[in-house]
Image (cartoon, rainbow over all chains, first blue to last red; front, side, top):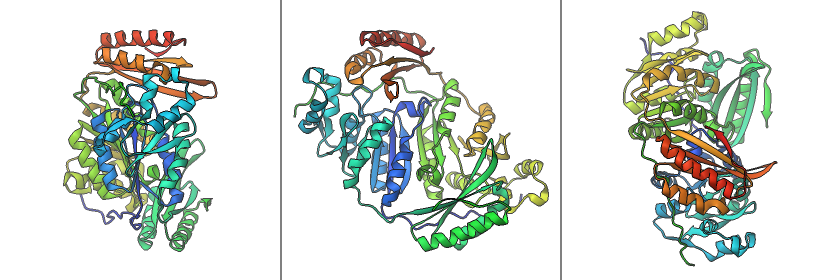
Length: 263
Length: 263
């Protein structure tokens, strides 16, 4: 029962100054009914702005759960993006939860109602649909070019729809409200036949030699065999390239043909 | 700026006595590089045991982040499942983080090492691979029939691999450690052409009449058009069926053909 020499080395990239968190809201995501795709879309949207997603949470359509998560995240990160729960049905309670988290009122707003009235005739504007014009006090509307009903920005929290096509179309109007940070660049090399257990020590040594570069290893298994992707991420491009050159050499030393995937 | 009549009604199913949370660990899930599939698999595994997943969090390969999330979740839910970060590379720090969260030591364990030695010849047991025999003090091993290296159960926390095929194969050995709760049954009806804004008020009224049933509405859009799934969930089967009958009638009243999806 000896303690092995290999301790853990954490990846030590400098802490980013601008950060984001994502709060995914919906019973269906937790029950296994639906698999989320919004986190990936938001992360891909924010990465080129230099805004890394540091944490995500998934909670049910439950006001206490939403408020607790929102208050934890909006205090800890520069921006928070919520998805889900702003539609017209009784289980759409995100707007109320955001207002409760910020301890502000919520009411139907004329500008939001006007947007709905461009979409629906007045006779079709059911009480359910009118719910979508309710916005926390002081919030800024976020345009929804797909289905009309707007999202909104409350403080540092963007509240977006849950349906992926709609959510993605709303990101555009978030852009003017986001002040980006230093962009994290990334480089990936893939090696077929690579085994983490074989190259792990050498990769750990590379990570230690390049403390400003975050280095990850992602094994894959599939019908065509197995292998790993090695990924380097950093804000400093020359540090990134130096570490990446060693990673390519490592793949070759392990007997695999290095395939550089992005650049 | 009038306040509309429609307040929000939360879904009011009785609070389950046995609950779970899922903690997904890995930079790649937050950067957008990888889309998680493990949450859905764990939820599908636990549902028939009467253990609903109440919350999920996604954090980076960062010890402080893992420890903070673990301590929040293991105090709030009956069981916690972590995925990711127990492989052989330097960014695999989950075992250390679990030990830190429980404030116990961590060391290489003979039983875990024996499992690895059934897989690897001693000369191939690199320091990197040996890392996978490090287990928090007092933990119980969880078998990994796919790739050997075990997971472990520490208190109420199950620590599993991140690679989906491996993770799923480890759930089997979690089973003896899980005491289930009341099973939540669910019924789903699909209606093509349904619009949430049109049926939202009526569905809200059904939810109000059946407080022990959790009712959700999930719109869909696709090449074949649009519509919604209406889902009822409850532990009490007769309450479930009563609400579901009204939901089917609602779909029909909206002019759509109700398609019952599961039963």
